[in-house]
Image (tube, rainbow, N blue to C red):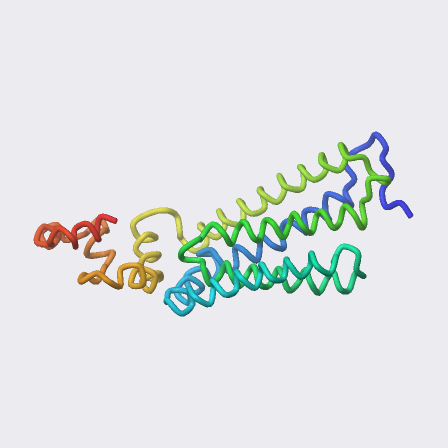
Length: 224
């Protein structure tokens, strides 16, 4: 049975709203887990160790194994239950990998969540809004509108968070971010003889006289 008939009218709002939901859900996950609005600092601190980095490598290998298994069993020919189970396993493994490798590859988490959105939209196209029900031009026009609405919603949420939490980009915000990510600094500069302190070394109130007494190696560490 057709869901939407392709007629010359306004964008099919069932498609626009469904696509908007499928875009926002993974992006909300990304914001909650991998940004300062949510638990980004906690996730980064959790992954700031050699052991977690190795576990992340193992999770990445597991993702590859799940993809290979999906190819071997022809998952696209299986029932919907098998497809959902495989999709959930792969998505969970990718999110876990992006969390464990977050401090080394911070961009990967948002690509993963965006990829989940694309996969959900593709599945929606095949299952619900089929090419026989709605032409490609109408489908992608509606999808573009959904992405624009999603971008406006996320931007509005970000601006609202900045206003309510007083997190506009200033020295206080930079100091707060540095303090909440101290574990990350310690991990990256664990081989340095200098313990980095943002307020002392990098802020507007930094101690210039103290910095002048640092050796070449420590000065390079602070500069980096």
